Image (cartoon, rainbow, N blue to C red; front, side, top):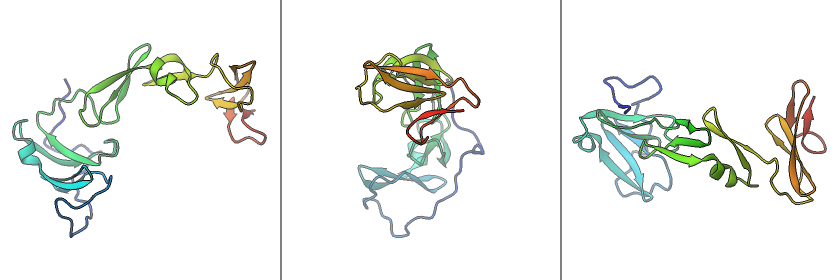
Length: 194
């Protein structure tokens, strides 16, 4: 169990109060704006497109007390939140890791719990659908190689390789030159940049 909370905010966190609309009131429209700290103990939260003022001390009263209203860059568009002493988060915002050879787990920014996804599902949901080569370096490694394609499909770059549609299937050819990169913006279409 990872406990998020400390006496002092981490260097990558801020409790600075952002400049805000001085006329903002609870219930005013907020669209899809991220949450903001009103001060060190109060959060402006955009809930159902309306601003709500959240008392972080009250929010944290049953969770060991208040650390503060903190802003963290990795909160996936949420902006800020109330951080409590006993937050029993298993992960931090933006964190991802491989749970196994073909399972990626990504931290849900709302619950701070890992959510697992099969790389086969992640790659299959891409456009166009791809096959999984497994999970490595905290990401799913996907490839077009061997998946169906339309005869008029344009060549594509796939990391350090060039993918071409041959006889209705994607064929991936490594760029075996130096620097060995595929240039998606090459004149005439994607090509190995040698």
